[in-house]
Image (cartoon, rainbow, N blue to C red; front, side):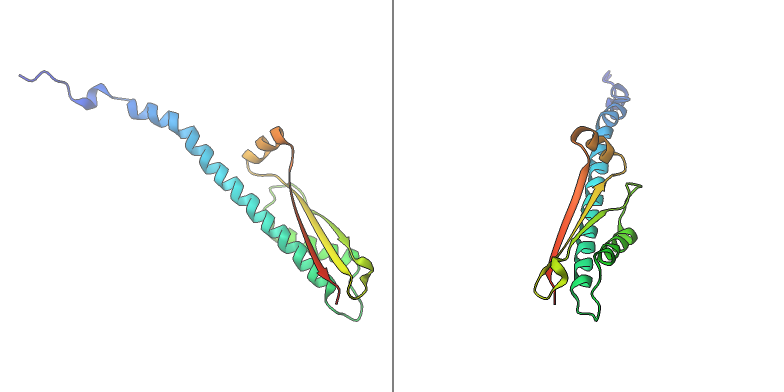
Length: 140
């Protein structure tokens, strides 16, 4: 007679314990990946907003855009595309260089990133996460 017990009877519940140990780490990795992806996406959006606003400001027109109109162009672009989670609108700074041909037009867009869950937790330890982008073009 073989008196050995089957393995599945002696290790009952072991898989549940292992899963309980690994689950928090797995969730941390998944949510960290989502947060990082959202931050990269928002960075790309504010980069494009700065570029679009600078391009609109340097194109030759009969009347040049004012700084307020250039800021509105950047804010409009960002408002339509940012994944914000209620963190507010970005801030825009325009340096038109006098608006003369050959002078640089610089548009800077700053945005405070607030993520889903890990963003506020991380910002509590390190301070707010500020994304910034600057686009410089020459007036035509």
